[in-house]
Length: 108
Length: 117
Image (cartoon, rainbow over all chains, first blue to last red; front, side):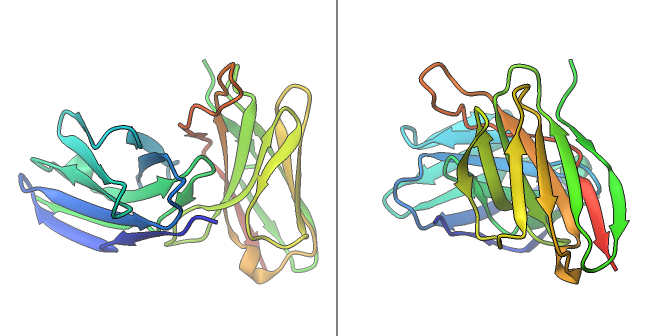
């Protein structure tokens, strides 16, 4: 099955700075790569996703890049705000194997 | 429009007991997946059901079983509970296109938090 590794496990950034989270996957057949945000005590919610036929996708302050050759993809959050503080999970493949999560803390 | 609903939201069991968790998908979604989320970790895939058939199974023992009903709701059953089964159990539904291919995006419920004593 798919194996997804996510780094870093924790990330602290100053408000207004950028945050980058990286994930690698093992199954070259994976073709769908979503990112979920989970606030404390709440359900994971999709924030952005990318399919294997594109290399980059952007939605306002959030962007995702995909390198299929290297089997890694990254989440970029620009101009971070306190409400961006949460746990972020990457996932790969249609049955969605999740990474272990990155706890992002945005310092005011 | 209601999202994915799960019940119960919280429950406490003792070792050796069994538990049944329930999930109702978003209206129009025919695929339901179950995940186990242990505190501090990412969701771990348990099962996926589509059109009442098991379409995928994660690395979980046979104590875990599930089924999907004609109305696309689903149950997750866990027998002979162990302390390590304590976790948040998330149900997620997704839309399946006419081609039979899943759209990809999962919509999660709030989860059922199981504590095994």
